[in-house]
Amino acid sequence: MQRSSIRTLVLEFVDTNGASHIRQMHIEILRVKPGTPEHTIRARLSEAVSEGFLSRVGNGFYDIYAEEEGMTSVVSYPVRCSAWGDHRYRGNCDGRLPKNLILRYNARAVCDPMEGSGTVRDLVSGLNRYKKKDINYWGGDLRQGFDLTQQEIPGRHDFIWLHPPYWNIICYGSGDTDLSDCPDYGAFRELLMRCLHRCYEALLPGGRLAVLIGDVRRQGMYTAIIRDILNFPEGEIRSIIIKVQHNCVSDRRSYGRMEDVPIKHEYCVVFRKPVCEAKEIRTELFVRA
Image (tube, rainbow, N blue to C red; front, side):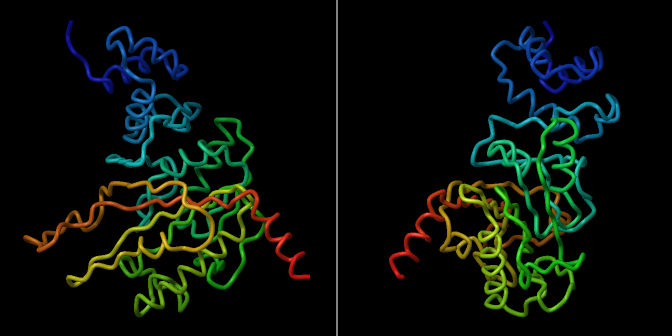
């Protein structure tokens, strides 16, 4: 029997059968490749969709909205899924990581206070439409008049996605409180910690705050932004996910041989607000009284 790749089998099956349920597709592929995990099928299918395959099966095909149950603490998306947000927006990330976290935590109230081109906004809209979820969403951005450094997040949420600028790697030029325009790292850190605090305050007890951040190397100096994120004094750290970087503008530049290795990863740190925190605060106020 001729050996076929998982991706080829996925494409052949959908071409023949249309937008069938993922489990039926899994059964068919198991006939040719016994032992193939379902999460492998989902991953190959997600890659195919990101390459423009969605138009071949119609807008009703929603398997890109399925949770990748085999996700680990290291994630890599070499081919960007273009279903959400605008890939032309500098610094925009692939939506599969926030998608998997939203589904894993069964989030019902999602917030993105630095939504950029709207990746998480579009993602939640698709989950509600194709997966029949009922997720409330609130998003804001400095370009739209919402300044997280100066304003509180409206409402309370059980999942907040925060993807701030990595200091001055990309300068957006949106004013004095734009984190990407800070003149030095001390000023950036102060504003970043303020943003983290506002996000944490907007979490429901038991809610999660996921912060996607990368370190900076400039003129031979390495700035470990992740160190300050990990030292954020509120909540409890539940996960540290390493996200491999792909398709960066810097990939198209030639730097010659560097003394130190290039940065090719980001971190997603997930904090959880303890359920008992509200009770502890009330108890402390009672004792003080």
